[in-house]
Image (tube, rainbow, N blue to C red; front, side, top):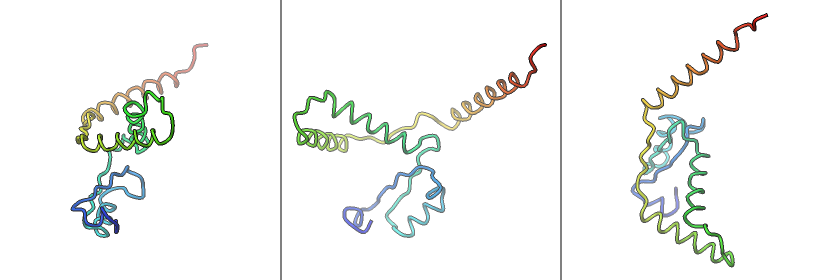
Length: 127
């Protein structure tokens, strides 16, 4: 954060999961106190950082590295840099499709499913 381009940026967004080291408003407040130009953005609880990384690398694979008929590493490097430049120029904010009510419905279905299976497994077999 003390080096460019972050040091002079109007805002720097830190995208974080809900891990214990940076969970909640206290973590965001600590970060902003240390670096006033930062904004901590928590991804939804159901969206792990690992899942986000997998999604990104899947896009890179599909859009930049396929087909993979490269003759040398320089060609791979150049393709990845071109992809990065194009992606950064055209990227749009992501709109999460799963909203709170959807998640509530999913959790309720899981609870019913778990209860049904618990009842089935607790019934004594007929003799």
